[in-house]
Amino acid sequence: MRILLSNDDGVHSPGLIALYEGLEGIGDLEVVAPDRDHSGASNALTLSRPLTVEQHPNGYYSVDGTPTDCVHLAVNGLFEEPFDRVVSGINTHANLGDDIIYSGTVAAATEGRHLGLPAIAVSLVNDGQFHYDTAARVVRMILEAGRPLALGPRSILNVNVPDLPWDELKGFRVTRLGHRGRAEGAVPMTCPRGKQRYWIGAAGEDSDAGAGTDFQAVREGYVSITPVHVDMTRHEAMRRLSDWVGELGFGEGHTS
Image (cartoon, rainbow, N blue to C red; front, side, top):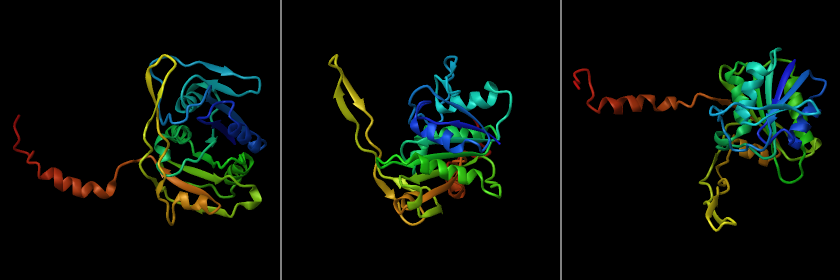
């Protein structure tokens, strides 16, 4: 098995290093990750300039671009030998519910899936203990499963691991995405040159975190595994929308 590892926290992130060490021996591992922290980059591709790739003494590759750039380059030109799957992480904080819209960790995994590879995004629900080894062991267990999992097109697994020692995990739960409430307000500051600047406010508290959600699972000590589909169409709204559009009066007899 040939596995591409990436992340959004940067090539020197302890979560990425722990993931590599935890998967050693499972197959042929290659690391291609951003040269710096790109948290919140979502699925951005760099199209305005060429990208620089650097190989480090430990064999890891860094790219001066986004997580999506890293996976795209790795799969589409950096290596001659193809990959079998992509694993993105271990992210230093949770990617629960609406977090996945902004997450560079999830974006790296979805880029792998766009390019035809099974993909997993894994995050540590960090409470300051930094049990990256637990999250790495979870990924290894998933990859070594006796029966392959077929999710269907444009689907990935979003995995969130409680920040606990391995023997304190309660198990695994298949979950749905919960939802966060409104984000906190922007935080104003003044730069050394006297100009007004702003920090983006913190993510909102969970508002849909009940039964079956990823929020509930990790809160109760379970690994949350959520199948995520990139198709963002709200299919159940199609009929209502069609009826509404039909009432706009823009029919076959329309002339410009």
